[in-house]
Length: 222
Image (cartoon, rainbow, N blue to C red):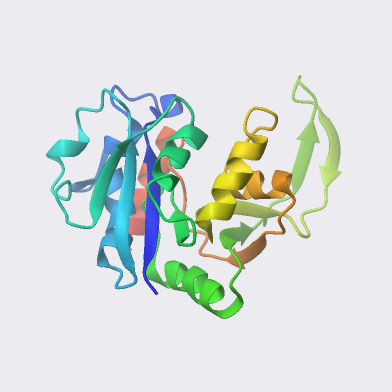
């Protein structure tokens, strides 16, 4: 089977504090988004990669991979979910699609394979996730601890997240505006679809703050 990937890349990433969108910041010799795209470009079962860009994006066209035959560009939206939906609507409803963050540069082929094998075996979608290892605290608005939360059965949601495209579109359209859709799994949850977790690598981090750049560089060197 061949699969399609959607990469929402219309965001700015203000918490990194850069003058350009964080996905275009460089680590070593490449931009973050080039690292994020690389596992899919090289993967034999990925035949199409749809990248959702901001209307005024002036950076992507200058990347070395911009003209790769697997890559297509669509215009994204104001929120992440809008950019994802713009990509999903270019894909046949019966296909399975992998949605991956543009600022998650350390993804390995082995984790992509885990998701694909799960779909081929079960016909059900799933997401990558890593187990929470630290002691978890819930606080009030003043950052005072209210309680310690047991870490058993707590997971960090990662990407890619892989679902039947038609079902994912239905879920997003049904719950958008009434629930806070932070990832594809949350749309499926609110729509009432059980979502399976597949344990992925903990080094599949998302660049969110400046310290993440150094950590990603360390992982990429390794």
